[in-house]
Picture 1: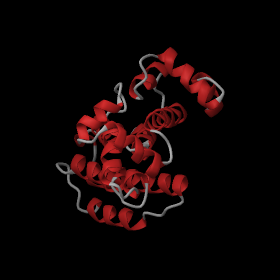
Picture 2 (picture 1 turned 60 degrees about the vertical axis):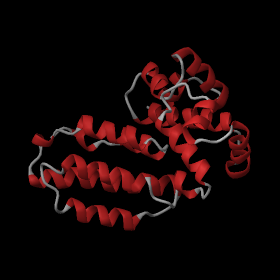
Picture 3 (picture 1 turned 180 degrees about the vertical axis):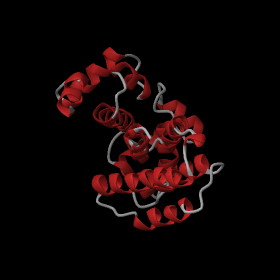
Picture 4 (picture 1 turned 90 degrees about the vertical axis):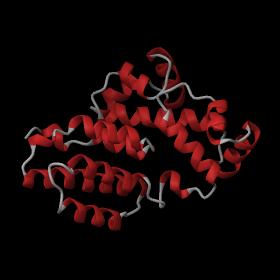
Length: 211
């Protein structure tokens, strides 16, 4: 079996930055149900489950061991027909855990705003887009971001784009143009300008540093 089927770095990166749907989409695209025996199905899903657990543990110093354990019980009964569904459930179980990321915020408006931002991070998101989607006024949402997240709405969106881009540069083989598109920058040039302003070096230099 090919090594790339056990390398889930792109899924880890998207999931960690809140893009649950993007992580599930990649999992579905890379998973061929017919390519696995009962034994390799379990190994494949366990590598995903334990890999996500370890990634979050490393990044946040939070052990989601109970989530990991419950997923292993699901994996024990997985079939060919339930492989995709079970993998998606594993990804979602970590992404929706209340102990980190979006779910750690108690304010419902902030959580809904972040869910929208993360789900549409590859688009040109505006404050108006988010406010229309979650039925809140722009001024109130800006106040909430300052109060609950300690940064402005615009700074949060840009920070999220750049953090996601940084992870993809380090852990995937996507081209810089592809990463710019996935992270919602209008083109590679603008992405490079924003990246260098934030980190002091270009996306290309980041990739060389990671290699």
